[in-house]
Image (cartoon, rainbow, N blue to C red; front, side, top):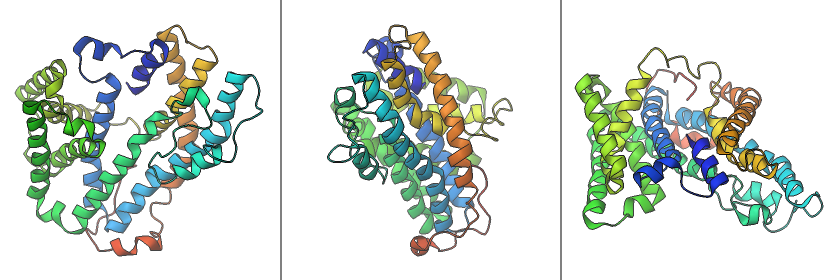
Length: 341
């Protein structure tokens, strides 16, 4: 959905069809929200299963940062020069060092917060990989769950998490009534509130039934939220989480990503590769061609990232957590974490 939404914007320089139809969020925005919902569910469960908070944070580090760092490096030393060549018909002048250079692109963004979106003036100063900016907020949510787990709230005071989620819901309701967009305009609040919905679903999973009436109600609420954009953050996250988690309980999807999880690689590489395709003239006037080419190329890059970077990093999950995580070594549960996340 993210690739399709971005392709529409790149080729037509306009909102994608879903936004044009409903006036609400684009399909790519909904996909990112869905990721944060699922992540809230899975990461909360991951923390509860980890032997310690240090172990939990070590696993989160291995899942996100090695792939992210390599993506930054590949963009700086390969994709950036290629775009420079396609734009100028020469590699000469590509800024390897100095202000706004390839070097500073890697260094300035190394801690997940995107402080430099471009190299030189590629693409007239537009972002080389706009998708990466959400990973910083994902990491903040990881830390939040780590803190809540370390102090025992996730296990013994789950109502506190429900209270935090309710506070975000009240803020969303106040935005609807007042016509302001405090929740929507503040990335930290927006993504944290959505992540908390998934976390609450995880903590109260034993009380959430899988029934047809609840399925139908979730579909209706999500439809209303999409058709009435001002209510999206108020009505949308909970039913979307329910529908995604219900889909995840089916046997048709249970084996997706078990052997190779390409989702992360597709997400972090699709944007810059789509820019390369545009500059090369692949689908620059046909969104369907651009979508297909983007998905194929991004999936290939994701497969390489999985086999050469992500899977080897995850193989270190059982290794001793680094010394800088010692303050988090309080035990949380004697069961080892399982799964790729």
